[in-house]
Image 1 (cartoon, rainbow, N blue to C red):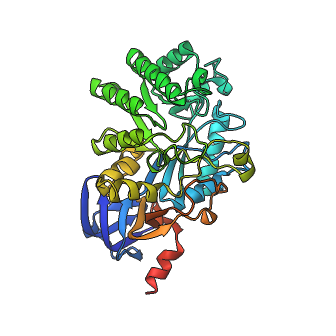
Image 2 (image 1 turned 30 degrees about the horizontal axis):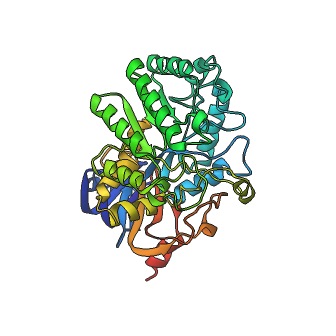
Image 3 (image 1 turned 90 degrees about the horizontal axis):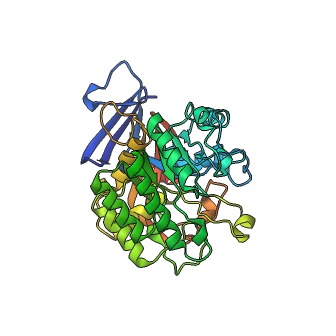
Length: 404
């Protein structure tokens, strides 16, 4: 589709300007090159800000096997409502994503739905059992990412072998850093010890390592040191680990931390060390949540939480927020997205940043309504999401604005 977005504030990690965006055949083109031979849908961006749509380095859509929690369709709709057009799904499904057959089935169904670009991670160990890597020759034909997210890899030698394999075959290892020997007694130590181990294995093997849902000051400091050493390490932080602390009783893994940890994460973002926001969108039924399932349904609230805490409360620029929600995660995922520049895919999100409103989980389109932030006041509402030049989400608030 061909689209012109007019009268809009344009922000990405590299610029802030006012003007128009032109998308032809799904690709951003020079606004001066508008063709009289083409039909364009005109979008009025008055009072709105256009950002590159968001890319999520860590999410769960639960299919196959747990469709009662979420499906690829409901997860895609939730992502689009949250301003996301690209997601990396974790492999702890049923069956687990331990074969190219399962991985390709997810990817192909995502293409049929067509709302967001779905990338599916394979599992590090076969069946997420922590025992064998024999499946990886098959898995690598379908994906560039491997992770045992939800469990982590306890066996040091297996992780060493997996990272060697990843380096030799161009894969990225996504680490769920949790030492299970400490999970019941000290979740801080559980995260830190496994983070330290995986960084050491990265140093030894040279594999590309992406550390998921980093939440402690100690882990942040060690990762920054690894980056300064020049190791091929990237890391993500979640919106909920900057919006809620341990005084909020809500089960998530890793748990909500202390204010010192939040401060360390925000400072690392300010200094440019954090690579991406990973929502760790983890939808559950009310019954499963009541029975102790860890996780937050967070892909629809990611931008308002990050915008409110980082930009409005801590003075981080919207350009920097775009860097960690759009440019960097798109680069990590190997996508031609994340900037509003000629030649990039026409994936755009229009947001309204001036009006305060309350999070209302009853309005989530995700099956998962599980959030501790219901009723919390935030700024930054997603009004429209465009993927490859096609409108995949338009909120009622956008239509009501246009009627004024």
